[in-house]
Amino acid sequence: MISEFRLTRRVQFHETDAAGIVHFSVFFRYMEEAEHGLWRAAGLSIAPPGARIGFPRVAASFDFRRPLRFEDEFEVLLRVTGKSAKSLSYSAAITKDGETAARGALTVACVAKEPGQPMRSTPIPPEIASRFAVAPAAEDDR
Image (tube, rainbow, N blue to C red):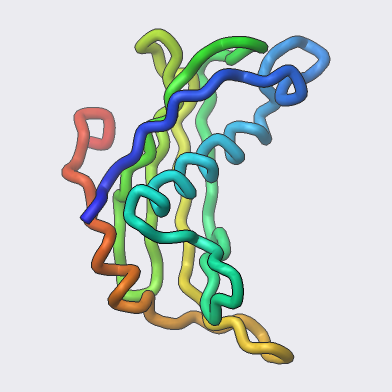
């Protein structure tokens, strides 16, 4: 079982705004990129072709502390902070040179996808749920 994933990345020019800093919306993409890495590390894809279930975002937030700029190298530490029968929750810490640039949270819900039907909440299949564990609380989580 996996409970966390660390992604190292560099800021791309197109991710910055006119002030030369990463636009706030891009932090959500960084968190999602780390989420997909977590799933790959668990031997899964969050969106395999033809899947009958999906994992839409039902809550997402970020608190910003320091800007990131073009060419900055940074890390995203994504941790599983909650696991229920129908959802997974994560925390994300984005750091540069050991200093926190931002902290975020994301919750995804498992839904059934049937053609012509609205999405509806459904339990996470055991073959997926068994791959993830809630990470022990970190100092920053307390």
